[in-house]
Image (spheres, rainbow, N blue to C red):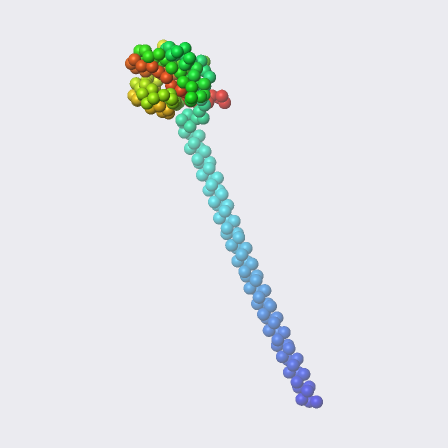
Length: 220
Ligand SMILES: [Ca+2]
């Protein structure tokens, strides 16, 4: 009996030690979890502070860029352009065969063309009816016929102006072109109502289409 009683005491003692060890283990884990949570909160705070500093720097730089851009002179080279010749009244020095009139160069169709007689200084001219800031001129050469037909476009003066007696040369094309050539000219004029194409010499002038781009003034 005495032996059994001693065994009970030993069992209770061992159980007590196990419970104490488990309690210590749980306590240590809780401490570790608390430390990790504290570090996590510190990290979050650090990143939040960094984000706020970056945001404030971005705001400063945006304000600085706006200040710089507002001080720059206005440059209309980036203005939106619109085509202003399509459907406008046009005339030419003569009409070959009474069929190939000046309007055929502004009808929006590169398969139709105007055509003068063979003559000295043949010309074609369009009237916008108002002035524009012209920036660019594109010429589509006749696109049917023999090679020699395309080569008739040469020694071309392109003049621009607000009236017939104030035309200024803005581009000269030596050429010769080819059948179907698409020619581009940077041709700036602040106050342009008329654009004229004229071949210097004796030749016939026939082009399929003339597109003239000016600063879009519809929103100003
Ligand atoms: Ca045409």
